[in-house]
Amino acid sequence: MDIKHVPEENMFVAELDGETASVVYRRFDDYLDIIHTYVPTSIGGRGVAAALTKAAYQYALDNDLRCQATCSYAVKWLERHPEYLNPKK
Image (cartoon, rainbow, N blue to C red; front, side, top):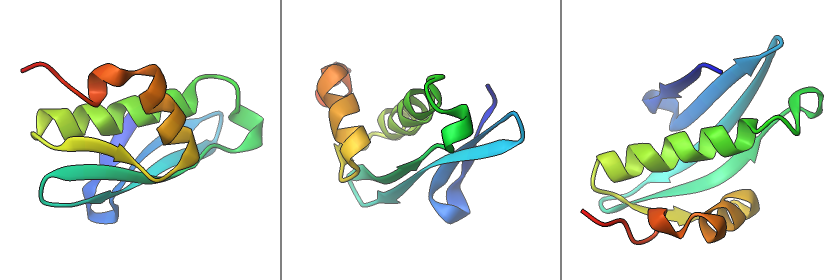
């Protein structure tokens, strides 16, 4: 799956089987907040949301930003991946 960062739109996108999935975020001075995750039903259940969320939070860590979530999916993802909440440098 090819994930692309579209910083001018504050999003990460992935295309699969002609469908586009996305994660939208807000970036603040010291943190990145995922506010919306969208995966079309036709490509659901294939790990697309998880891959997009991981890409966004990896971008945050790579840029010394804390990871936060407003989106309910991202909240659950962070609960399952606490290493993104308290990264070890």
